[in-house]
Image 1 (tube, rainbow, N blue to C red):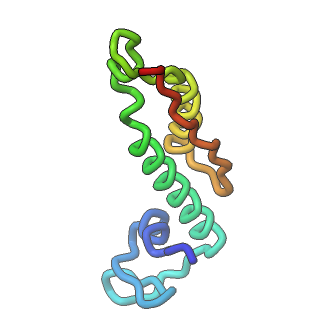
Image 2 (image 1 turned 30 degrees about the horizontal axis):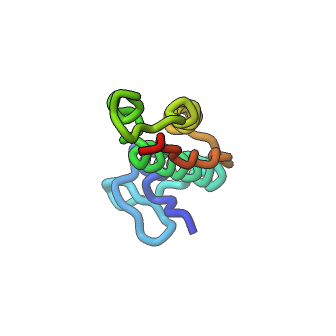
Length: 112
């Protein structure tokens, strides 16, 4: 189950608090909201969060000496990670409702 609360606050700035799935303003008046729009925003937020986590997990592949052949061993398929990260970065910057994340490349190291 996806948490809708952050999306409610994003889309409805007059909302100051929620109780369950009911939103309220500063005067404790109920604020009606579009559940479909809120759900879609929550799904986009989830996409952005996952994409950001995947980028963090592969940050190490961007360090210049990781793929430098002078070092032994070195990452021989850095280009695969660059392609992967470009796709994932696109989802972080422009999140979608039903993302399809690419498979993370398996690191291939040079022979020692």
